[in-house]
Each structure stands twice: as structure tokens, then as C-alpha cells.
Length: 168
Image 1 (cartoon, helix red, strand yellow):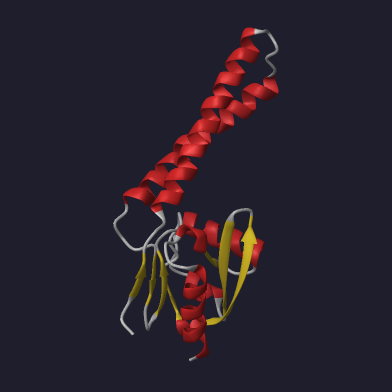
Image 2 (cartoon, rainbow, N blue to C red; image 1 turned 90 degrees about the horizontal axis):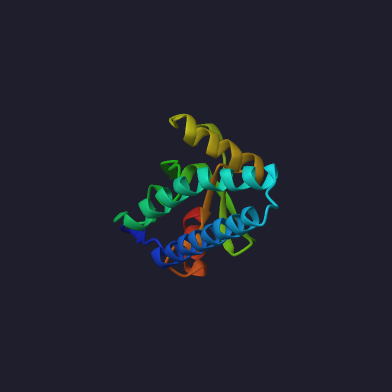
């Protein structure tokens, strides 16, 4: 099998970015009118400050994904390479994958690859990548989680291809 390159669903990411920008704008307008009528509180200021600090970072990451020409997910005879995550974990070889699980969280379908040895994947990661992998390990039981909703191909088709490779 040649490399199967699955593109990123850029329209979904652009739509989510637009929704975030709209909600932030409405929040700023609401805070302005609350301030204008004299009902301002320290809690409201802190919440808005956190959003104003986090939002540019999220906007940058989403625009980076939208502008990226690389495939979001590459499936080859060697393994799986996920390019859509904020912190790329690199190539996970088929020999290290023992199974997979799927789950739906809000509006996203996640594919979690159960690994034989998590340390093999995490040994060459930088600090940010390792923290992300450890968070996924705590939350999902595996450091390698793929958001299928951010990919263009059919979710069932991707799962079928991965399960065929795992059975080999």
C-alpha cells in the first residue's frame, strides 16, 4: 500500500474559528454594556481577560492548520503520522499499536490508538508535546488521539483502514 494521505477538513476548522471570534465579539460588547450601566465585577473582568489572552493563541493555531498544505493524517505501511494535532507526536509504527477505541465528545469523533509501549512514542518529544501526550494519557488512556471530525475522509473508512493494518 502506498501512503494514504487524508486532508484536513479546513472548512470545519474555519467555521469553528468564526464561531469563536463571534462569541468573543459578543462577549466584549456585553461587557461594554454591563460596564456602561455600572454592573462591572472583578469576576467578569478576569473571565474576559482570560479569553482575551487565550483567543489569539487559538486563532493562530487554527489559521496555521488552515494554511498548512500537508495532509492531516498519513497512513502508510510503516504506521500512522498525525499532522493535525497542535503537538505532533510523529510516526507511530504498526508494531506498537495493539488496538483502537472510538468515542464521541461533544461534536468530535475521536479515535484513540492503544499502544504497547507509550514510552517509545514519547521519548523524542519536546516539553510541550510530552505534556500534551501525558494529558491525553491521563484523559483517554493513550497518548495518541486522532480527531476524526477534523479530517475530510469518511470516519468509517479511516477506522476500517486502521483496523486492517492492526490485524496484520
